[in-house]
Image (cartoon, rainbow, N blue to C red; front, side, top):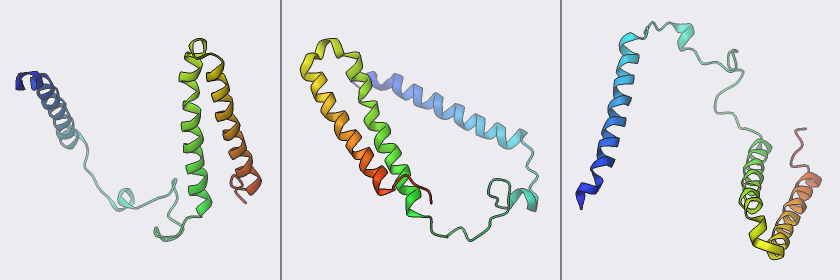
Length: 118
């Protein structure tokens, strides 16, 4: 029974070996000259303006979460579109309800100003 796992073990060993070889080559071949300008922190090419522990605006996280939620919900449309011929009228009505809830949620967020950056 354990012989069935030998290909997985070989795959993991080869992947680990390649990763270690590439890391070793990077350290051996790469130029390791470290100077203060290279080691200094930066933000988009500029020196940092404030402390790295400053608070972010909650709206940044809100927009990110909304993007993830709507992106995942839109991902449900692809399997529905592929099986549209087989699911019939019931599937179309179910997806219509799903999209209606999605649109109502989007309109609610828009009216509340969740997508504004003011």
